Amino acid sequence: MRWLLNAGFLCLIALTAGESSLAHEADDAAHSHDNAATDDDGAHDDHDAAANGDIDEHHGDAHAATVYDGDHDGVEEDYDRPPLTELTAVRFLFALGMFVLFVFIMRAVAWKPLIAALDTREARVNEAHAFVKDAGEQVKILIAQHEERIAETQEQVKSIVAAARKEAEQAKSEIIAQAAEEAQSLQDRSIAEIEQAKQQALGQIEGQVDRYADLATQQVVGHRLGG
Image 1 (cartoon, one colour):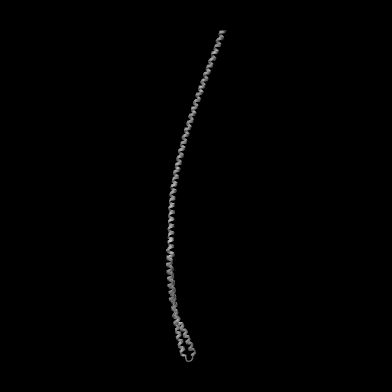
Image 2 (cartoon, one colour):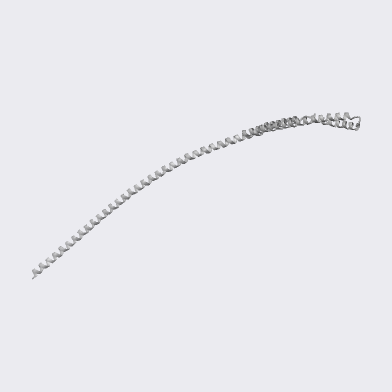
């Protein structure tokens, strides 16, 4: 907010330049007025001489000239007033004093608290900006850590799935081998039982054949003996 003070001083400089210009113009006008007054005084002297030369013939005119002289003296008394330059200088000094007083009052009452408040606000904004920047950096770090953990978790999941698949394949092979072994054992037992039943059946058949052979032999021998 230093620019407010700079603007105030620029306004003061502009006011000073304007008042100086007005003062010069007033001086020029005063000189012109003085020259006109001098010419008027010369004309007044000529008029007095003419009036004094004809005083015997024109007494009434002399009286009128006297009245005119009184009036003209009144006009000359107006020239004794303070020139416009002095009034302009007084107004300029008064305006300058008021402006300086206004600047000091505003500087003490308004500008200093305003500048302090703006500085405080700027400090808060800078602090908030720094906080947001730090928070953004922390978020980036957390995101990187989170992505790293996700990658590690995915690797662990892949390892667990691969191990489970391997165990499943191994268990499958074991189950298949066990089933094949049980099937082979069952087959062997069935074959053994069938062979045993076959042997038993063959034994029974041989026994019956032998018995029938003995009976047939006995019948043949008995038939021969009886004949």
